Amino acid sequence: MNQAMPDLTKESLVPPSTDSLGAWLRAHRLQRQMSLADVSESTKYHAKQLESLENNQWDALPSGFVLRSIVKKFAKAVGADEAKALELLAQETGNSVVSPDTKNLKTNFTISMNEQLPDSRRGSGAWVWILVILVLLVGAGYIAYDQGMVSAEDIEFISNWFK
Image 1 (cartoon, helix red, strand yellow):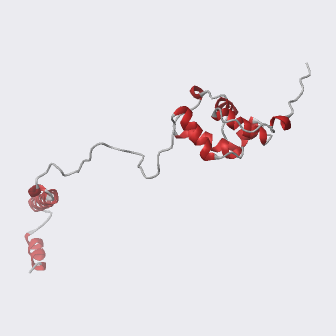
Image 2 (cartoon, helix red, strand yellow; image 1 turned 90 degrees about the vertical axis):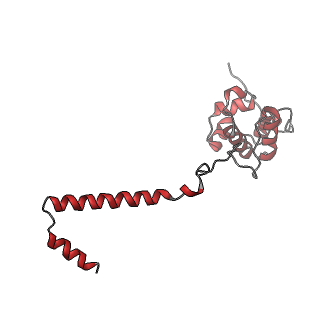
Image 3 (cartoon, helix red, strand yellow; image 1 turned 180 degrees about the horizontal axis):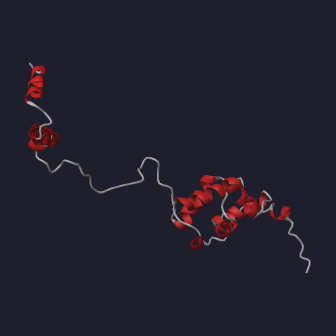
């Protein structure tokens, strides 16, 4: 069972077909006399994924930007026009590139953090914390005085600082 190796030079004379993305990429690959293993080495994608791409087996491939990345890297590796490859992908699968002027995340509503609070209550949180800290300091001072840790002379000495 000695099978003859196909003559890639004859196949490379055929102009790239634009019937499908896979056929178009395969034609470019054959024109450059590259195997799927060569393209796999260049793109770092598995040869099975690239074969699925050439055979238009979309169910065997990831979707979204990953599929666009595979197509773009495949086209670049075989010397094909990357933009045309992405255009063919969009025609066949509807997987298109989001225009650069739009944001990736979109929302139908906006929320302001303090939108529901009346103006008189805004910023009152800081005063509450200052009041809590003062109450704790006074309480700690009273307990220290009550336990004998601080004498009346110490309090008089400290009060002289503020005079």
